[in-house]
Image (cartoon, rainbow, N blue to C red; front, side, top):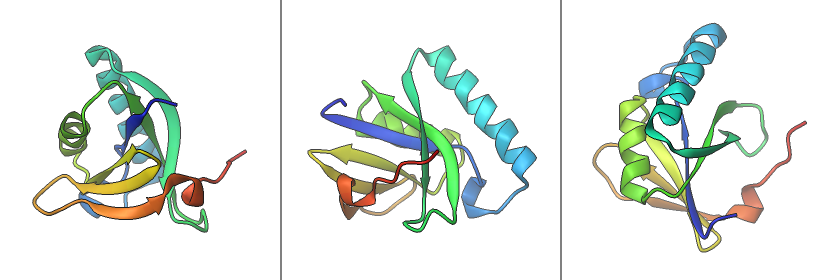
Length: 112
């Protein structure tokens, strides 16, 4: 794993719940956009600790926190995640300060 990486999704834009098929379309469009930009990605699902809410997204290597934030804005997200030095930050795509969410190992779940 890189020393720092970002996580972004394109699901549920602006915090609105949309259909599964629309989220799938947005995920594929975001994958195409990231490929177009030449961004190194790997699949990640972000969501609640109990895994009742999961959104497919992408881990992004080789980008700065601000570049990941800009992609979140492009994908109409309220926030993105930044993992650095073992800690998880939720970084708003609009105004506001990043919030620490603790150690990433405490939030990691393995999905089938």
